[in-house]
Length: 283
Ligand SMILES: [Zn+2]
Image 1 (cartoon, rainbow, N blue to C red):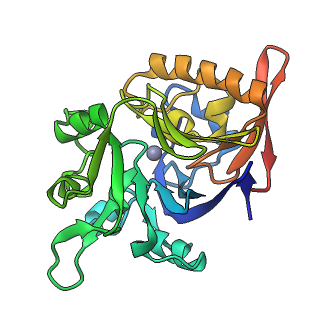
Image 2 (image 1 turned 90 degrees about the vertical axis):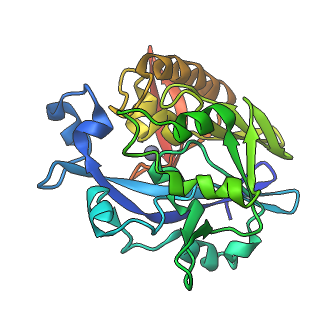
């Protein structure tokens, strides 16, 4: 059972999205990134949809909910959704938990691959309802505003059905900036991927962990500040954010937890001359 200090956490695999390599690697030339992550015949790379379950204060805290299951056939094809390795609710069940056991959902941001599983089609009525009926959903106020009023660039990923129903059922909790969630667990603003992107910090008994989410979508993005995805709304902000957290991770010997990386889920960051290097852990 993985722990950071006294805090228990578990990865939950909610599928894979096969995404264009140019999106994942931005300005980095393919001739460089393809050696690290070879694409398929459509130039797509596998981005895993890993969510995190954290237990603290007797609460089950779920960080992000994957892409969910509301997409029609065309939508699922566009996102390259592959659930052959399992679903979020299936992963919870393996831990002995049902959707009703989740007390808090933290959305790192409201891009579809992070909050699609917030809601689902009701099996009888087909209405879009929260997947976790007893949970409060903690979302940054500025992220909510950006997602409720998307622009031409963000419209394809900010899908109202993934979050607007939470306001109707009274389950939405808007938060402002860095926010304590439970003992040893807090959210921290890691601006750049979106204006109010948040990561989840675990601090317990002298040990540190950070679920980085899309501050560094893949492990390569955390080792190299200049490697940013084409999805980042503020790439230069994200570079500065990463510089700060790289130094923090090396100084505190933190466990860095990745969301989309197909090979590395947990790692430690070390200084290597002027650069940083990750050492993977078996989480
Ligand atoms: Zn993402």
